[in-house]
Length: 196
Image 1: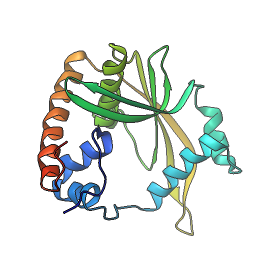
Image 2: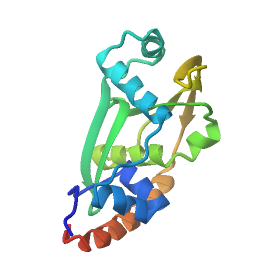
Image 3: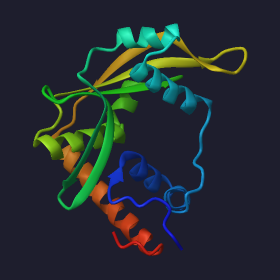
Image 4: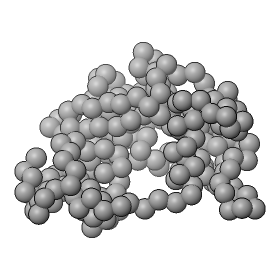
């Protein structure tokens, strides 16, 4: 069998998918089959694209005005940490002040969901690996969405900021899980003739 996507790193999406379903990870990342998408996911992608490139959509431009001005958008970090190559793209980031911002849309988001977010822990791990320090501030910017009468996803105008704080112990414990899953992925890839 030939491996579909050769990756020598682990990303948040790969980690979280494998943790949820090794078979689904294999189907998408190794066999190259189509992943799940829906209208809400498409909307989130178009929001990010509109924020990056500008948009004629008044609601997306309103989001741009609400968000604080971070110096970097879609900031990619690829770095090896304790033998594991990590890769992530942080929505908005200030590398000088070590501030992470994540943008989410959806019908509901809570402080508990933010506190339990593995994605934010992953990004904080990237920060620790690259800068030798954890992020000083992590904010999740949530923008509520709903479906209109034509079943299209749209912003409601409601938004909220959730702040999360991790301890070094939180991040190191999380990293042990990342390392374990990465080793399982490496073993699975061997089945496809890739020993990386």
